[in-house]
Length: 121
Image (cartoon, rainbow, N blue to C red; front, side, top):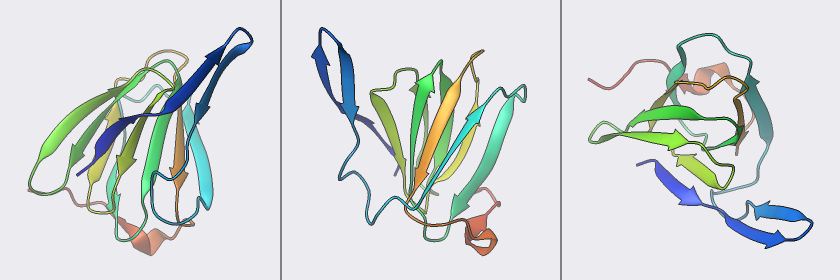
């Protein structure tokens, strides 16, 4: 099941430092980010093998997840929040705020055959 984590953050007079490490298996092989979207919903898929870590760096968005047994909604509205999505988790992104920037990190490269678009019943 997808899980929302609070990333370790260190605060100093010069600013905050938030650390992402040891949160999903393997190495981060791919980064991408979504921004300036006018679509009410984005994505809608799961993976066969890839894990994703999602952080809204600016603004906010909402994530719907469904692992076939449980479904949940998560709001990413702070860069200290990180949603870890396992391969079994079908997910969809909506409610992007104006100026929202969503960073996605994956432990695998893009492979079209790894993507499953069918939603759980």
